Length: 311
Image (cartoon, rainbow, N blue to C red; front, side, top):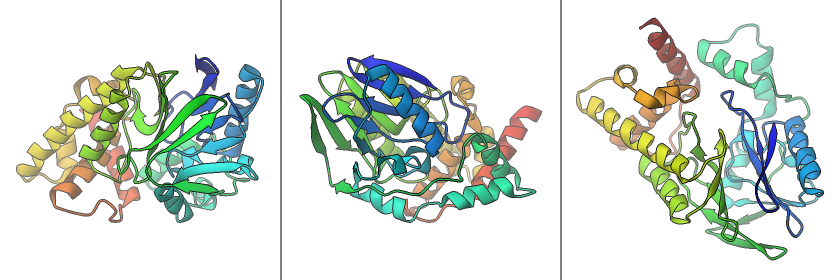
């Protein structure tokens, strides 16, 4: 983990992107302090808090979760008795989300199908034994502005995009945006809620704020070029998927036919199957909140990776 000061009294805790769940967090060290997201487990969140304390001489008394995915909120218990903020739709999704025991059982299983084994290998570095799922204590609709000792933090709802409850944190005076998983930087995005247009609109909303620094949910620090790159990725793959869908190709064949070009260098390009699945659901008029067969999609991703390796 690397702690970086991205503006005066504004910090990011950056994990190297090693696949599923290797996420970033942030800290605004003004007023009573605000942490932006926790991590996949309690131990990693403690490391972030310790790093923030060393760098800033203080630690946060408040937390905002940018969305409900567990790699951004399974350290929340360290903020018990303090204010935990989230959009209403984020909080609702957390209530019915995955339990830590499910992942632990997966890690303990003697054998797993290929997709789940791929996921398990990525998350074995985390400790799920002491996680107590901790929900937000304060929810909001739309946007919310916080005064952090004279520093304004704007919590802006941009979902549905990556998820229905997506929030970005904008510090106007510092020209910093904490993007949560609206931005995957130099790594292939994952998402199964929302629409392509919604996600692109969220990225364009970030660009309209004219930030100098964007802290992504995953991957290294970015500037505006990071958001532009992801927009280009989405527009390219969506156009390719639409073309293959019109030709009557099944999703797995469509994924194999797409030449990712420079985007193939991003971490885990085989996550392309998640974009294909979402686009095919959109094209058949399916609801974005319909159930998704994650195990099947992860198996498809592993199969795509093997196809590329054998080509």
